[in-house]
Image 1 (cartoon, rainbow, N blue to C red):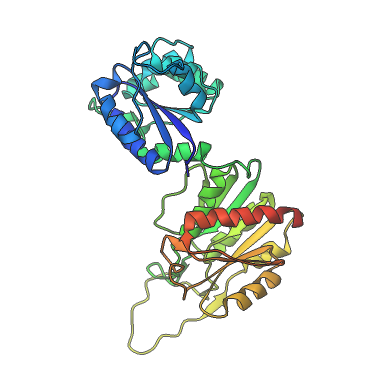
Image 2 (image 1 turned 45 degrees about the vertical axis):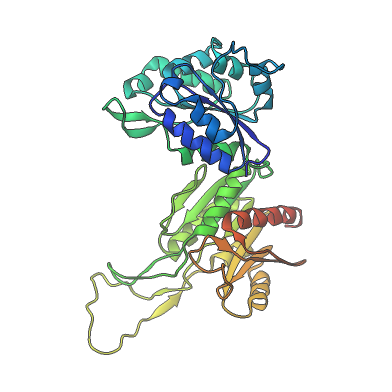
Length: 399
């Protein structure tokens, strides 16, 4: 996702510098070109050779290194960078950057950069909470920096509190969000539903389905990376909420209906990927129902049809996209759903197709619109999410 992108990674002198090495490896695996600049203090924690082996590039430490190319090093690095990330950032370096002090290779280079800039402060809790540090971070925000909030926990100094460098996966997510994709959804509000619902039988038992929520979460994450303001209404899942997405947790089909109908009027795009129960128990027992001899009959009633309600009450220009999981007659059933629900697109997949079932990380989707069908190949759900978003953009002018 970062092919052709150059990330300028600044590493400063803190124990968390070891996480910067893991981050470098992670970004390289995403096909980024990673250029690393270490402060003198950072080299006391992790050697330049570590970063050189991981990035395939020379790690820069000295502004006045005589072994240089013809181009002025700090200027050439600044010009080629698509993004700057300082991780970890000490209180000292935060203060320098906030006030334009350029007295080493890192601060000199960053002062010449015009690309997006991220900074991840990591330090003792008292240092982080010191009003001077907070003022410096606020100054950086005012100058356009994105400040990545530190995590809380036990610090290397032995104290417990805020000041830990976030994990490399979190830092990489910030990089991806900033530069991985064109912001073609900027200014758009996107509503996504995901996961199963749980319909209570009694305080112990419920009816549900096998949905993992992975497809809906992938769409929410992809839309956020492409600049959208994303709200995710999610049934119970084992997934971590996507970064940069407002997540609204729900449990039952009725909960999801209430949340979606409340949020949908403001949305430019709605992707209803949740597997909502079609039926719910007619009565919910107050106490656990003890098993008895013989058969059990369970009275069920229909739940409200969320997609049909959205189609009947859509506003002009709004794009509605539903999902269809079938075990037979995939195209026929999905085309009927497109017309009946008054939506712009149905993303259809079959439980019988290998790689398209519940709980897996891949999908095989057929996009069905009024103009025809588009069959997508077997691919990751992340890639499929972007294909769905691509198609939805083309439908906006027709909605």
